[in-house]
Structure formats: C-alpha cells, structure tokens
Length: 294
Image (cartoon, rainbow, N blue to C red; front, side, top):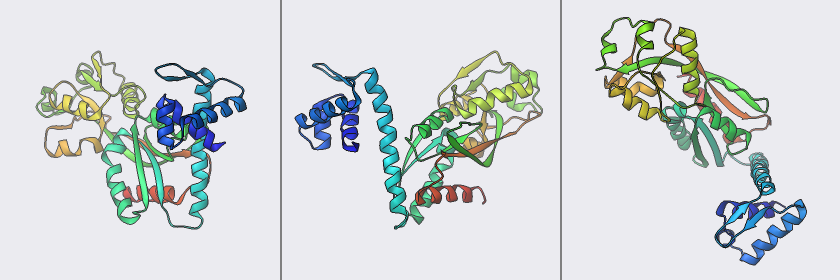
C-alpha cells in the first residue's frame, strides 16, 4: 500500500500521469493501474483526467492529505529503528518562524554540520501559525516558534526568552526625543507583520498592554522589508532584539525609550505528541539549548 500511496502522491503533485511515471521510473500504464487499484480499495474516484491536466476530486484531496501523513510517519518509524543501531544521520526536517529562522538557526545549523556531518537538514521558514500547521501535518520533524503556541496534539516546550523593542530609524524625528510618550507612539505610523506571525501577535499584545490604538498601520510579510521601511523613516515597529543587531551596530535603526518596554516573549520547541525522538532531533534540540546557555 505504501508504494500505491507514493504513486498517487506523485500524480497528484505533478498533475500529469506521464511526468509522474517519469519521476517514479515506471511506465504510464503501470501508474494508471496503481491508481485504479487505490480507487478500488478506497471505493471512490480520486482523480479527474482531462486532456491538459489531472485534478483531485474531493475524495482525492482527503486521501492526498492523509497519504502525506502516512508516508511521513513511515519514514519516522524507519528512522527511529535505524537510530537504534547507528549514529545520528539522515534527513532532519526543521521548521522555524522568521525571527529564529533568519537570525539564529543558521549558526546552529553550521555547528550541527561541523559536529554531525551525516545529518542532512532541510528548513522551512514561515510564520508561527504555518510552522504549527506543518508540525501537525508531519511536514516537519521539529519546529521552533516565537510567541504563544498551543495545540492538544503537539508537545510545546519553551526554552528561551526573547526581548522585544519599539524601534525607529535613527534619522527619524521621534528618535531624537529622550523619553517618548505613549501618545507620541500612538500617533506614529506602525509597520507590522501579517496575521499569524508571532511578531504580529506580540505587537497586538503590546498595544493592549500600553492601551494604545494606532490609527495608521501598514502590514508587511517580511521582517527585512519592515526594517528597511523603518530605516527609511516610513514609521516605527516592534521587533526582537535579534532582528536588529546589525542595523543597531550600523546606527541606522535603534530602540525607542518607551516606559514599559522592552517586553519578553518565549521561543518554543514544538514536536508531535509521540515521545520517541530520532537521534538527529535530540542533537538539534541539545544544540539549540546550548546556544542560549552561552
């Protein structure tokens, strides 16, 4: 059955029987036969074929989503069994939210490559909501997220604190003010991350804590873009100290002195509820924790 699922997933992703057959090193009739066997076993039509492409039916969409989970679990099982006899090796799928993924993860991966060259990492960067969903659907083995994350099917372990600051460009008028009032920051243009981001969640909590309601808010989906906009004097924002280290050293953006800030939030490690972890996962978690013990 696992081979049939792999064939079905290839057809669904390629949307073409010929290209799926080529990728799988099979003949097109063999691929068609495997799909027919799966449809017979499921008891429903899974694919709609046209002259131009292949499309999933509603039943096909359900089977595709579960096939991805089943194949991921099968790979995890094989890896765990292999771990019993061998050193840490193989693929490790890591998910990370933007702040951690862009500013901390590269250093940890470099250390892991140096110490454990047989572990092959692949990285998915997304906002906190996306990384949680990736963990739930078994697209990643382990995730690192910022802010608050909860789900009954996940093991979520806070491991470090992160300090968040209100920042502006050093050439902005507000930066020259010794002690910025809440009224002044409320009247500034705020540049914020998109919904679902841990940084956006932290920003919303900041507004509640300081009891402010900024009237001018611009939403960007990239921390780098936000920093460049702030540096250019477009407005102010709320970011992790990790995200602005280089710019602060260059004196292009800096913290504003606002009463009640900085504010701490958590970074958390997320895995599924299965207690068994591969050696690669254990090594990665150990390196992450060691990084914050420096």
